Image (cartoon, rainbow over all chains, first blue to last red):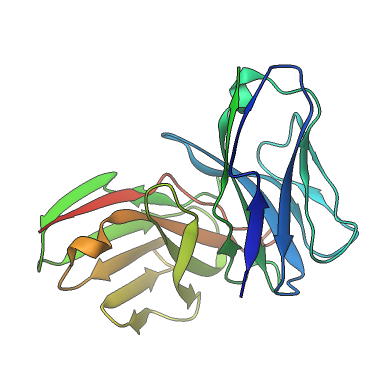
Length: 112
Length: 112
């Protein structure tokens, strides 16, 4: 049982470059989420999707975009990376909004 | 803010002792969830307590909820070194998109 798979595990990126973080789940969950975790700030929601074909903005959406073309995949794109986007990114899914969330192992991103 | 706020920020105890972590929130909720995060890993769900429940048990975990005070507590009894982790509460606010709002967590260290 894979659950939530994130790729890459880690990445060093030059500022200004475009980057897509991948997230795939095999639980047929309706809802998916992207968080960033920074020291002292906890987890903050970037974007979410309550069902395939829909997305919504979280607390810190600026500089990020998402798409939800199907149930399983929820990629997060940084169009032009900046150093303040250095963080650990977690993808999660739940059967329905508000239900128990299942998290991936995270992507550690450094923007230089 | 719809975030949960955990208290204390850090807690250090001896193996075998009980650990109590508190969570406060500001909005009406559908449920409140507790998660655990081992260093460098994704979050793992521990327990969900609904707004009409006052107490819930799962193994060595006991969670209480007081909606009148907008607070919850997580008690870990007979702690073990393997309980060392960060613990987060996440209220599911009644308004909005039913997203969870994580706080900064309590860092628990259990000394063998």
